[in-house]
Length: 287
Image 1: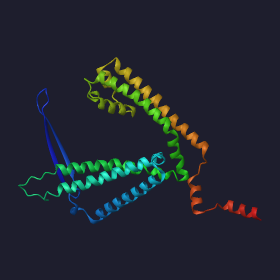
Image 2: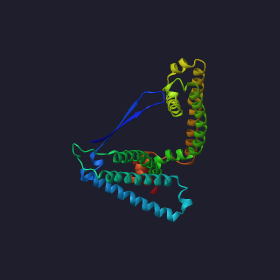
Image 3: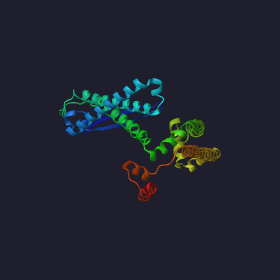
Image 4: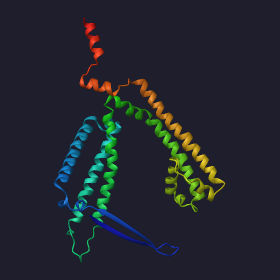
């Protein structure tokens, strides 16, 4: 392992020094290709080749369908976000190799090795790959839509998408209104509400049931209970039930428009398996 250590000394206007230490651990293989096993190198090469092949397929489909028709399909947007993040990740991966190539490893005892630049590339590479893993796994629903017993779930998401967007707009209007209210009332007294971003995190945790009512009551006995009750009623009771109703409405629409296929029926049709009773009835009808 290798590590970069950043020591930061901040001198606020009120006086004193606020020290901060930032430690980034890296594997040597993230900096030097010769320290990577052949198996990992081969796997990364195959992955890069697959990304290039699928990118070529999507470019061909784009050319055949035209820009407007092609991008009407939401899954094509996911495909291109996925590909762009893959190429960005590969670029950051090789940028770390290039940056560290001028540093001899292991460095001499009296030599200072500056790995901060390569370390930043490694950290960005991990973050991009982490984001891309979501898009990669989410694309599984694209293929689920072609399986009869899984397509209903995907179609429900599509049927409820428009109403969910409208719901999210309403939710964020209400949510941000409470963020401002909590920030103005508790910003100078409670650390969890000291900034707008912290207010957002704290109120989101409140929607999940993680809240400190005693803290609200301690610093503002009048507004604390009022804010808590109003936010609980609007976000947890009213808006959450509205979201459930939107999804259920989408499910009813899909249920009426298509026939449900069970897993057993799908496997029987895929492998050509006929139940015993049905086979005998067909023979009798033929006679």
